[in-house]
Length: 424
Ligand code: LLP
Image (cartoon, rainbow, N blue to C red; front, side):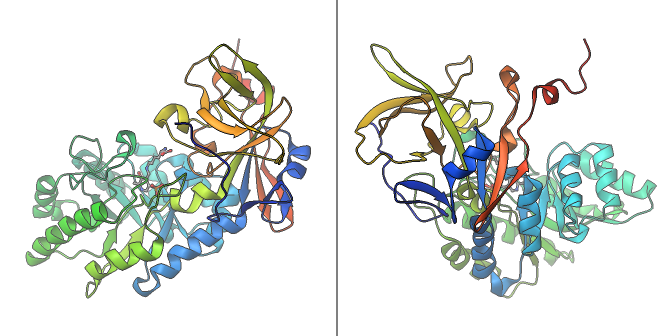
């Protein structure tokens, strides 16, 4: 059954007025006249409001909310969130570089990832980050040795893999035993038995992140309960846990999902931590970013075959890979709605030489013509950050809308950018 794309929702500040798609107080078509396509367009208001929703829901627990940079790492996005009190969750030296550019305090920065290199570890120690989320014993040994050499003491959290199924896409499941992430309970217990040998990497926290786009509280509660039981046993042996990092993973609304709200999530999990004295940390990415952005693109051709009608657009899987990679569903809205147009069933595809280069398949959309603009919705998270230059396509520009003004916060790449650093 083809899915229809005619409905609107209010989980973000992209909406129609007189048939024109707006972002906050600006017509998207007006932006596109200046910037061309493809263009990522972000709503400052949506970004900051999603952060505020989380801050409000968890206020009583005073958590540190570290926005997950990987979801959308544009400096303007990071700056907006850091200004509103967010810390940052990073996974690489590059993300650390970005965090420092927007003046995120070290003590509000946490660093995860299974493959931190010695150089990255050194840079993070220098930046005085709050915590390394450690994913293996060799990594813990490495951090300890580097810190010792630098004559520094650093805090680490052990990332536990609780072997809980988050019921999400396989590629974004991280809390099951067969994934590469975290340390199982048994190994973690062994680490704590001999924790004094890590003289410069002080194990003072536990981290858990079981996956992404998790729509109900149940897997979270299951994982957190296992973690709390583990901590209880540890504390029985005199070990103190100061930081408890509960990761990210909250689902966003892409289509007809009905994920828990921040309030519901808080109501479900906060009672678990009542009477406990941990500094709670969260690492939300998608919840804050997904609905805060769209990818605007222009129809180049409409091509009809015996079996299909293709809308060929100027964005490709290099710009936005989620449909190709995860089979993800994203609404596609016209930037200017022709109220008289009929619905037709289209495949919306990019110009790249792969059959996986699509944004929608068998989708009922208002009839379109070459030159029309489309908005691929809910692309603020894992959109631009996963873009590449495949097929030697310069990456799109990024635009931030704030009220009645907009600013290009990343220029469209040029052909010169494509060959920077190359030599023939
Ligand atoms: N913390 C850690 C340790 C993570 O690995 C992740 C995401 C997050 C926090 C943020 O998770 P979120 O709140 O955004 O669910 N590219 C995929 C998503 C990959 C998620 C990777 N880790 C997608 O487009 O669906």
